[in-house]
Length: 192
Image 1 (cartoon, rainbow, N blue to C red):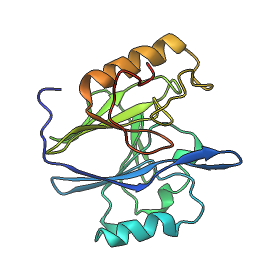
Image 2 (cartoon, helix red, strand yellow):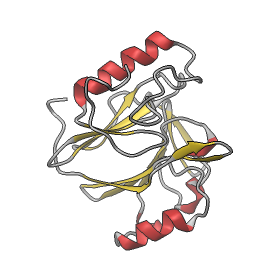
Image 3 (cartoon, rainbow, N blue to C red):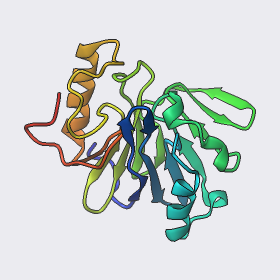
């Protein structure tokens, strides 16, 4: 996205994992242009694992202005209520308190450096948060669980759609923050 500004900051608050029966989604913080966005405040072993890194970054839960959920699995949504009533963005709507406003996620601009993309793949309802930082274009996404994949996501209902969306994101991003793992730089070995 040539028109994506490059002024945002991304911090990974918690690197997710999927080591059954233990599962935690990757939780990220994006700050830009007065917006403080938490992406995927899902399952964690202890809520302090989210609140402590926020505090260490000088951010209180009441400072959060938006929440984005990559999809509606509990491991990515269960801690939304840690934050005040703010807009919660998903694939089809923005919800604030009891107000539901239908709108597709594709192209929604939260700030000049933060854009939502509809990227159905892991589920039909997936959203990728694309963030322009001074050094990278970062994709916060569940198109990958980790940098290793899995190549064939066991939840993906359409393998070809997953491949197409992965290619789309790889054409845009220089750094990927996956749903259950550490950030990675895409390369030839990145599952498509």
